Image (tube, rainbow, N blue to C red; front, top):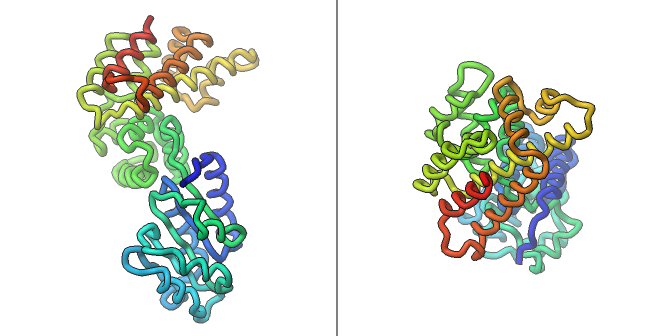
Length: 346
């Protein structure tokens, strides 16, 4: 049985592995598993570009797939000697499709010192009760990745875009998150398309609309804005559009955006309560820029003081629980969202 992954610990482990690779401090075996395959992609790419020079790869790089080989053949590859290189690199993608992992248990007893073996299990967590997993302890770097929380996706998009030397409007990041969900692989591909399709260094809402087909008029960001401005007519109109197309507008993405928005308001109230920062400076620390956005948050903060903001977050969590369990009864996602809005506007 797979143990629930500690998301923060997972990210720390990913960063550690990546830093060690960049410093050429390689492990002999890497086990990459979990819900989010993007982290495995990054680690494999880092190893591929760091372990070997280009003129060494013909004889020292082996990339195989779990549905096209077996563990015994992979072990044979690992037992070869590198040719004019300090290491050889053996990468097994889709390792979850291997019929058996038992040959690796024997390999773990005496791994080849010159071989770097990577087993990448896509969308799969390892069963920690198996002898294979137990034998890995102290002999391999293990990454059990976890999906990003939905409310953190816009932040991740903004950070990723900045690392590429570009910037993205907060509304555009929210809109893109609505289109992609939590899949980092999909986000990276969409960001790449956006960058290729934009003329400048800033990705705008219009760019996301053209590339994804998601409307700026009906998206979670606009719903947050309508609630913050206490505009029930607008909020219920958006909710009606969401209810009519639940696949395009899943309630989990909507609740994630609402949680992010009101959590920002909560942080804003906390900063302002300290008394040594003005509203504009607080907004800047939150990543809220531009007069229009600052005014939007000023209105929302006035409409939802600290205690009311905390109450809204509690209601969002309650709706989230109902959407994921039997507590909601037979209520549709649209009905749950309407109920939440009704309670918010009381």
